[in-house]
Image (cartoon, rainbow, N blue to C red; front, side):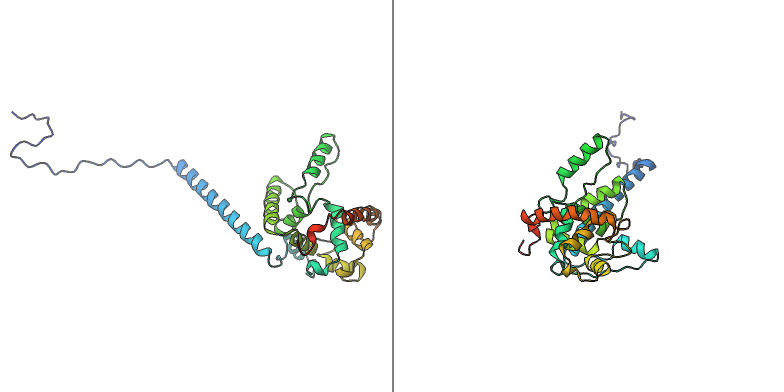
Length: 259
C-alpha cells in the first residue's frame, strides 16, 4: 500500500507538475540602502575630485592659471584688478631672491613643506608664544591658485594636497613664476609686473635689490602694510642681508633655466 505521506510518484501515475511556491527575497532595510548609496556617492566624489585636481594641476603646469578666487571676490566687491603676466625670465632675479629671503629660505631644498619651520612653530606654541607662520612659497602658491584665504582643517588639508601635486608636477622655477604673477601687493594689484609699475613706475625686470626687498616685506599682509611705509622700510634691511646669503650660498639655484 503506497505511503500517502511520500513525495515519490506512485507507479503508473504522472508526476505532479505543480510549481512549488517561491519565497520572496528579503529586501535590505531602507537605512542600509541609504548608507550604501551615500558611501558609493562619497567614493565616486573623492575619486572624481582626485582625477580632476591632478588634471588641473597638470594643465596649469603648461598654461597660465585662470583668475584666482581672491581676484574674483575682489572684482565682485567692485574692485579693479591689475595684473600683467610675465615669464620668470622677465622678472628681476632680485625679486625672486627677496621672496625666498623673506618667506622661504629653504624653498629650493624642501618638497613643499619646511619641516624645520614647522617644528619651530610647534615649539613656539608650546611655550605660549604667538603661532608663527611656517607656510612655504609652494603652500602659498597652492592656496592662491586653487583655494581661498581663511583657516579651517578642510582648507588646510586641500592646501596640503595641492602642494604635493605642484611639487610633484611642476618645477621649482614654474612654482616661483606662478607665485610672483599672482601674489597680491594690495589695492587690487596682483603680480610682480603690476606691482612694480604701481609702486615704482618701472617694469618688474628692472627692480633693484632694495625695491625687491621692499616688495617682499609686505607680502604677509599686503593690504595692511605699504611698500613705501615705515614697516617695509625697517624690514627691508633685514631682508637684504638674507638676500646676500641666498645669493652667496646658492639658495636660489633651483631657479636657473637649466634646472
